[in-house]
Image 1 (spheres, one colour):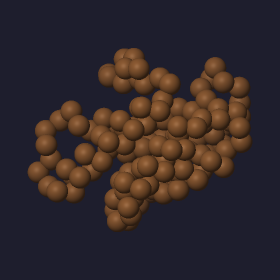
Image 2 (cartoon, rainbow, N blue to C red; image 1 turned 45 degrees about the vertical axis):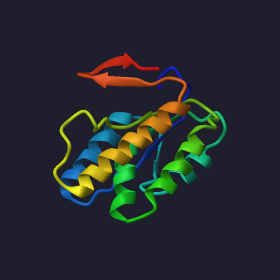
Image 3 (tube, one colour; image 1 turned 90 degrees about the vertical axis):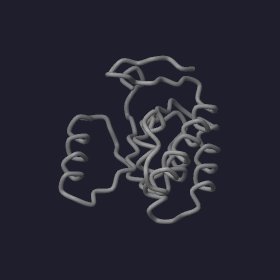
Image 4 (spheres, rainbow, N blue to C red; image 1 turned 90 degrees about the horizontal axis):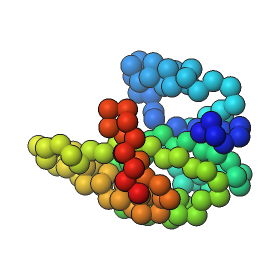
Length: 146
């Protein structure tokens, strides 16, 4: 992000339901420093992205939390993912999207976790398909995938 001129936007999808998550969010905020504007979008991520001015550098953190929010709210996850992928396919500035790879472990034992893992995998594939560059971070090292 530092290669892009400020101001930068940080779109946060996390929701603080407990003290531990509030502490995590506070730590993230303290690390950003000056030049950042935080936009909270736990559900309407596509709308938050569309509202950005053209050319605005943005860091979106993160898709898997956003997906979790929709699943727990029992929204139409497929429709929300399609809408998000559509918006991301039309970049109007430098956009950086964070997501978690959750499909490399064992198959979860419960249905909700399996639905989440499968939905996250599809979402990551759809977003990667429209991205110009895809990096997989392993032990803090970037591996170029696309």
